[in-house]
Length: 60
Length: 575
Image (spheres, rainbow over the protein chains, first blue to last red):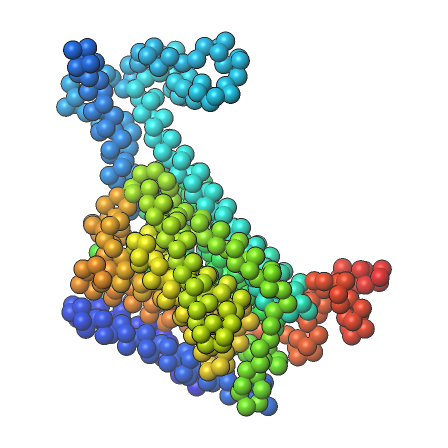
């Protein structure tokens, strides 16, 4: 779960950078940047954080 | 008639001066300050005096020795032609001497400006220390203060060893500081047919690669205190449960690797700064004073560490509801906010690296933008809290002020006052929303709100450049090697600048967060990031530091609970 989250975070960072080389359209680049940011945020707060919260002290 | 005659006589000399002063003024930051002073003797100005010929300085009427001996209470006799350094005392003052003095005066002004701005930023450490300690409980005061105190030393040492070299080793010559010519070594890889600058390779130990240089020393000092600001953000979010040894290792890594790499990409000539030149995205990633480089880096690292070490004991109930854990000294918190706001006048206006030349006079606009955004940031937070909870919360007002300042840091050099007001206001509301989200939804415990103040608003500041840059500032002609002023979406840019900023945000999340997370996870496995539950309940002052922050309040209670160590043991025995 933690590894998956970490991979999502890194993938989110790579999407906009790779996108710069695959298209010269500003609209496409804008969309890819937003997608990349969303993927990273989901990776951090949606997956990684949830993985840590599963074993949180206050739950036990 | 007489006037015309003297004008005719002065014109050639004036032309020569203009040509000579103009060359360095045109040379922009990424290019070396080639051909600065006496390079071109201006052949067009026939009949102009030679640079090496003695000047007739009788019209300057320097004060006599007798006049000077009487003192100068009016300040009109001090600083005359007598104070211009001459290269050959036998020959006396030449035009070359005068022109060199002009160049040195410009660089001297910029050195002094940058150093004083750096000193102001250094003083922000005191602000961070008081804000964070005030927002923690008294039983952790010594530990929190010590983290803020030692972050300065750990970070500085790491930055001197290798951080500065990685960040600025390939930054190129900075015209405002008169050169920094040795900073020319950037490690670059070619990807997709484009050069991607990754890190610098000159400046290790501030001596390798010819970096024992006065201008580089000024640059180092200024950049070092910025890096230290990033590292001190983390101590707030992880306060009251962070093991001191783990903090030391984590800080060293942030100062040596994570911060310098991203700072290189943004400020050191790395690939993010070249998105404009390489991909036509405006001026590339623009971050004037570091909303992203400093604050988002610190805030995202704080998020990574906070997630790994988990919330403080007692912060959450079993059903997931949050308990408020108030700080012990609100006076200290608000005093710290004022200190930080004061220091921010070094942070943002100082980032011109000068007060003279290349559009550096925009320091007036930058300082005013900084002031306004801080003001509207606190307005936004006060209004939000007042409307939502019925009271103008003091700690959130302070956080609103800081959020506004964080958000305006990146755009401060590119926006007008209206933009600054809006950016600050949004930041003030955003920090409240983010604190609520982190606290209640994400269950990430952040005692001081550092993740929201610096992380969320750092990212907002980066994005706001792509929206609000008004196209009026170009700092001498080109920023990041692209001609023309930086312009955002609301001022006519087709969107390239905004995309460059978003790529920067994605990189902050994808690289900075990921690197910080992986490293701190490894530290957690090897050293352990979190103190024991017993230490946490007792307060970290004695278990971690060996002495309490406020002995008069709590010494006896502590002495009954657990034996002290170090100096605390001696003090305890004496009382």
